[in-house]
Image (cartoon, rainbow, N blue to C red; front, side):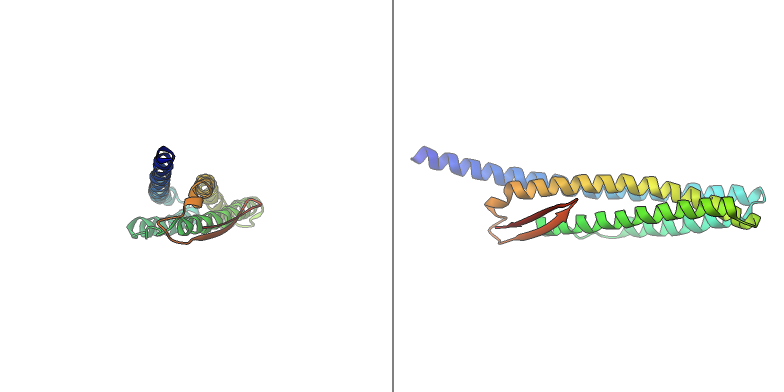
Length: 196
């Protein structure tokens, strides 16, 4: 009887330590992924601004202005994100909720990116003036980059979300530091409802 009790305690503690380490790894993975993404966006802003200068020097002031505008907006988003102090989620449920919201924002962004590319293509092909066609080309290029960028981030976020759900379903039966916790979550047609 004593050996079963010791085995149970050992397995329980091992599960708690393993679960904690997995969550820490997942949180760090999210933080690193988002920092890398913002550095890439900042780099794209620099490329857009340099391209804007080259376009302006070659007389295409319309496309130059459009690329410069996108560069400033992207640099602002990336800079603000890199400089902000992101609050570390206090619970697994909070982590999952934050990741879910981030994933949904990326889905909306991806839809907007498709609209940018489509609008740019339409302006480029049907624009009546050189200015409209130049703007169309610039919008299409910027939207195309953002479409690829957001699809990659969406996939990475979805993978972390799935892993987080798998982790919480695997360790939720043991509780989380003695607290009662509840998670209600819908993702890709599956509904998870967990509570201790």
